[in-house]
Image (cartoon, rainbow, N blue to C red; front, side):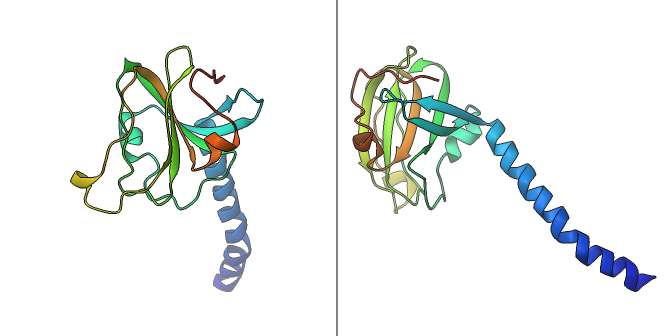
Length: 152
């Protein structure tokens, strides 16, 4: 009887793990927002609304596909600067106002590989409500510029 239960467990375990993997992928999709660029391209972005999630951001991520990004949504317009402490990849950073017009951009922001207190801060010079992070080079590839409107 024990052998039978063990055999069933061994056969069913991969199926169970596969279903857990699928659930995790679906969960991350629940926290996603499609962002349509002026040229019609669509970026599938993770929404960062919770302050704890916003603080973690892109930390420890080792890649970001060209059609992926991270969208920070602040409760109110303000001056929001960002840094790349514990980031592993360079990014393009895009700030938008409440109308979703691009008001500030910083391209090819490098990861900060020093202590947090020595990491430079980027942006935050224009009032914004939204912040989008893309893989470095994507803002140029998509032809994004100040004044462009993003749809989401």
